[in-house]
Image (cartoon, rainbow, N blue to C red):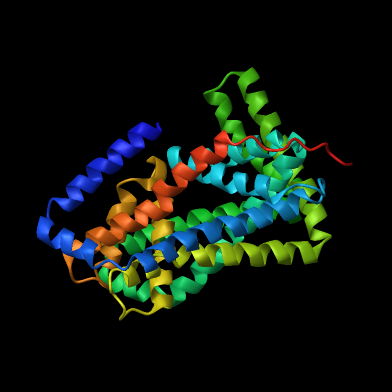
Length: 332
């Protein structure tokens, strides 16, 4: 799968560069401010570090001696599997695997990851609402098709958060509603298969509800991981700004650039292809063409952005997967 994604990426790179003259590309590379490009890489690394801090804080509720070295493996492995599976569906199971390798009980690890997920999704929705107020008119005026995709992406994320909040506060009602929603599957699935699905869904709802009770009882912890997640997202959303600076594009407002990146990430989440390959490059090019007049610089900016936010983290994830964590005994 990784080989296929890199092959598709190479084809997109080739197609993008076809309209750029060799002399223009060489000139843009020679004048590239590599120090700013490295700051973009550092910003991606800091995003991973702050996500790792969230993991460490949650795990230390049960494993006080859980090391930061193992915590960093979790988001790196998550990014790897998010990048090579449709709709980023592999990230959650990969994190669970990484935590269990460190000795975290499977049930507790699942509960912690569910809570991490709901905080992350909540902060994405908060960021999106702020950015929609700042930059949606900019998108709607210039890129009508993308504006519809952005709204659709927001509705999906909002529906996920609404469902999780319902579990937290209307547990019994939500379980009944989910059972009603699953019932039509009996027309297509065997009774045995349907029962397994019901049990799996019930277990996940129960696990999430139990963990939510713990977290709701500790508002200090909830606020702490929410703030860390906001910082994590801040560094991630800031990456295109540093890439523009590396290309000598200094006339843009960093808040507007961050806003555009938030909206692009929302669009990418709608593409079923692993890593949003194709859709990500197209969205970036369409949005950032308003900031960069040179086609050659626009293509180079897109390639640098994908290198930092996608291909680099895949390589890092492979390395993290190869590193064995310390096995820690659970302290009840």
